[in-house]
Amino acid sequence: MAESLETERLILDSVKESDKEDYFINISHDKKVLETFICRYADSMEEFDFSSYPGRWDLFAIRRKETGRLIGIILYFDEKEDSCEIGYGIGSGFWNRGYATEAVARFLEYLFREKGMRTVYASFFTGNDASRRVMEKCGMAFDHFSEKELTYLGVERDLTYYAIHRKPERSDPANRDPI
Figure (cartoon, rainbow, N blue to C red):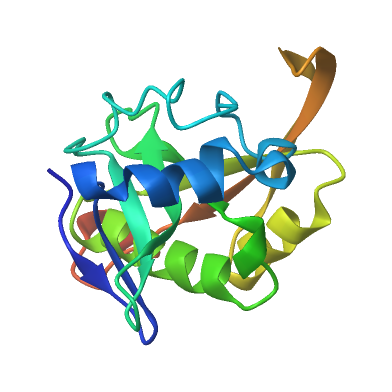
């Protein structure tokens, strides 16, 4: 199960069975979200297969502290020895309020401090300026461009990758001054 992380306005924790309706409304049925975040669209609650989400250790619900309701998700994947990639999606009804930036900043802190990552990557469909701005506000910088990396919703998509590297600790032997 995912740990519980807090920010000023948000809680990031495990996706629960009781989140099915909020997940459906804010992610899987929100066509605006699905233009920018890879997820299977669900037409109705009846056809929405939610069974694989609750309790995952790599998937966190993004909740407003005020209500406790799921407004989005954030996850890490493609974990290597000391690096991983993150992905995030916020329901379009909650866009332009700083929630994604707040969640990503806290999540990066968690990955560096608690999970020991040295490098974290994130990608966005080229042209998704909102996601690019979130990454830049969180200290991420351009890493590389990948032309036609995948086909999503019937369209070949270019991806732009950003990365952030953990600053070495003073006591880190790899941080010695050259002699």
